[in-house]
Image (tube, rainbow, N blue to C red):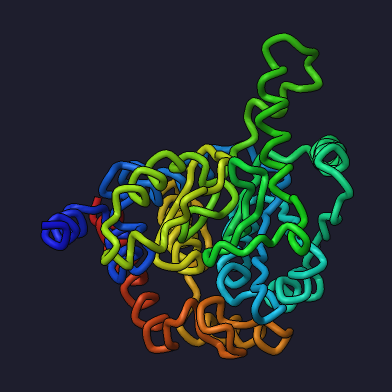
Length: 340
């Protein structure tokens, strides 16, 4: 019955989501079928990006793999692609990582890109203070996260294997917390906080333990607790998902692919508004080059833990197939726009 409902969900899903959820190995398609996040999230997030006042953007990424003692290949290519798209439509992007993951992120975004290392604080209070100072200095109109480990309800940062990564993961999601906290002050505090009312929070993840997935935490818990022992897909969902929320969270079979889809949707929306932008969706060759750059900088596949230019166990030909499908969705959307 579940297989039938999944096929039906994919058949009725918006085109970008249908391609992102096609392989379904970590419970994301069941999550979307349950309405968490609501269908249409890719185009909705792109529309909200394009409606945002242009300004600074803080873009978080980088996920550490304990077994390999290295950052994983999922995340930095997606962040680089999304950063390029945001730059193309007028945002000034600063990437955010930590000591354990900044090297691979810098390798993908290029030496000229601004990559800030969020420090390994000695306490939650020091992380909060750093995040609040950063927001005051940068005054972002957009904060986004692509495959960045997020805090669960116990205050821990857990991998998909349940490993505690708190000793190697800087609490960069304190940036999201600080935006939420400052929003609460807007109604009663001075105009100095008004900027936070309009700072959009976006998050991309593929497992439920990533920064910004707090929007779907209840649904993740419900699916995980009801999963049969034989249901390997739902058994991969975390029992204690990330609790840090975003305004729009986007999910897919890998975070890179979801970030690629968001970039393509931004391209579609920008062109519909009459803006001249280049192709914002990478080619298979460009994606492969980004993945190789991660590996050359010491990164590994997050599932196999091998130094290979693959993502979560998916081979290069799968990456190429997904990109071809996303390109088809984008091109069809552009053709419909041209016809009108």
